[in-house]
Amino acid sequence: MSGGDIKLVGFLCNWCSYAGADMAGTSRMAQPAEMRIVRLPCTGRVNPLLVLKAFQEGADGVLVSGCHPGDCHYNEGNYYAHRRLELLSRMMAVYGIEPERFRYTWISASEGARWAETVTGFTETIRPLGRLNLAGGGARDDDHHQGPAAGSASPAEKR
Amino acid sequence: MNGIVDTIKNVLKETDLVLGWTTDPVTGVATPARFHDEKEAEQAVFDSTCAHNLAVHLPRLKDSRVGIVAKGCDARSVIELIIEHEVQREQLAVIGVGCGSLLDVKKIWRRYGYGVAIKDRDDSLLIGGEQVNRDEFIQRKCHGCLEADPDIYDVIAGEVTGEIPTDTVRPHPLHDMFVSLTPAERRSFWREQFSRCIRCYACREVCPMCFCRDVCIMQTQIPRWAGGAVDAKQSEMIQLIRVNHLAGRCTGCGECERACPVGIPLMLLLDEQNHAIEEMFAYGAGASLKARPPLLVFDVNKDIWGKG
Ligand code: SF4
Ligand code: SF4
Ligand code: SF4
Image 1: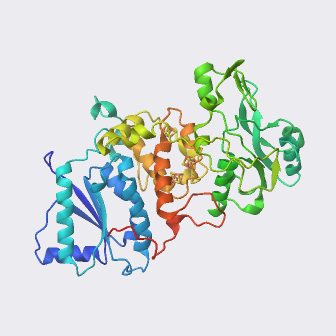
Image 2: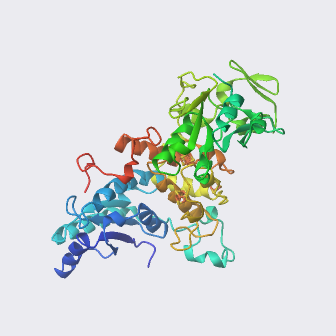
Image 3: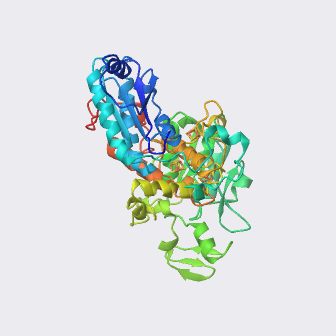
């Protein structure tokens, strides 16, 4: 992938937003292609660290989407998620990540058009921000048993 | 009202051990100690160098009846540990001590030399015989002191004044600089800071609320949240883990930053998070035995932040 391309990750709940995204796809609605979707049972399963880890491993934007409040398949998963995700969005700037790079939304299975709009809007917000480059300046997770690569610069120098 | 030695002796009649402080013979400042009998208790002290938060030991003493000497800030950790069922109220005898603010011994040593004589009197601080401005050498956390007297105790040793010892609430020394940075600059700032991390895990080991011990996900292989490489990126990840796990649980005791051997300003992260938690839920960890950590509950009617 060329340097300028952005990578987005979407954590979507199986019951509402994933079905909504699926609907947008099968109805052939136009939407940008930068988003990789990870399907999860519920936004209640979205550990905020999944979002931060995605940024650390090279994501430039992360979107979390689940059922509307009151519509959770497991009744209350998204209520717990709401607290965590709101806190996470308030902490983003403290971690040094532009707050726009993280969003959470509620999209139902029947809202294919809304999904297409959301993902388009999100992608257009991130494009001008460009790459986050948080993955630089350190070993990838799976590298570490090989020890530091020969001639690798210190994290500070590499940045 | 009894002094610290007599109080500990009394408490030892009903407990297996008491967590307190004694004077380190080499440096002359306080160091944590465990007292098991009257003879050992003779060595107990409480003074303004007793900075350590001894509550960190409680989760490892689940099978004992434990006495613990606690300042106001330490008592918040005790409360939070009880709320989280890490210790039982019944197994504890809390010896409350009133605190008149603590000295930053490391700072004194850096300035005046290791082991220099420190004499802290009510009205003056003498370092190596020289009178200095005490305010300059107060522990940073004491400038944001919430309670100088413990909120939970079975017995009080010495005097409590009911007063917050420092009238100056000061933000973190780097706070003003930090908030003036753009997100991209903060990114570089943290990478720079974490490039110094030696992965000693002292920040975790010293934190009363980091009691997961050998199942801490900083070091689990499955799932592997952080790689084993000691570099800025992985060290930043372990701190992101910690900050997230401390959400709504951190009492702001400042031990993590105090313990970090390379001076990483960890409290910048935790202060900001504690502030956000307070704003969102009007909640401060360790303030009340009846509280529930805010991320373990929800409130359909109040949780509206204009998003979604
Ligand atoms: S994270 Fe730091 S300030 Fe918070 S409870 Fe743990 S040691 Fe204390
Ligand atoms: S960082 Fe998290 S898993 Fe590790 S000890 Fe602290 S609370 Fe437990
Ligand atoms: S105490 Fe400091 S050096 Fe040690 S692991 Fe924590 S941040 Fe790194």
